[in-house]
Image (cartoon, rainbow, N blue to C red):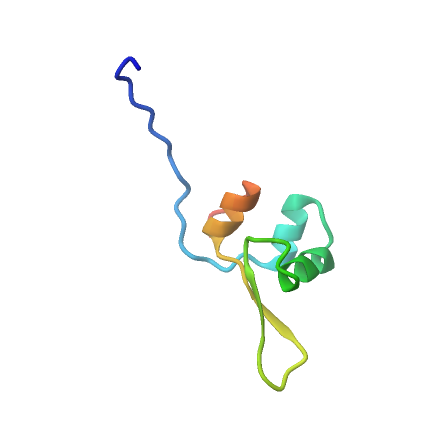
Length: 76
C-alpha cells in the first residue's frame, strides 16, 4: 500500500419508496416480474407485504436497497 486513500461518493439516499414501475423500467423488466420477484423473496431490493384480510400486496423498495442491488438511483 502506498498510503493513498480512495473516497467513494454515494448518492443522497432519502429512504424514498421507489415505484415498482420505475424499477421495472430501469432493469428492463415488466412490473409484474418485479412484483412477483419481491413476493417470492427472489428480488432483494424491497419488501412485499400482504395485510390481513386483503388479497393485495403493498411494496416498499427503499432507494438505498434498490441502488445496492441494481445500481439504479434517481434523485427524488
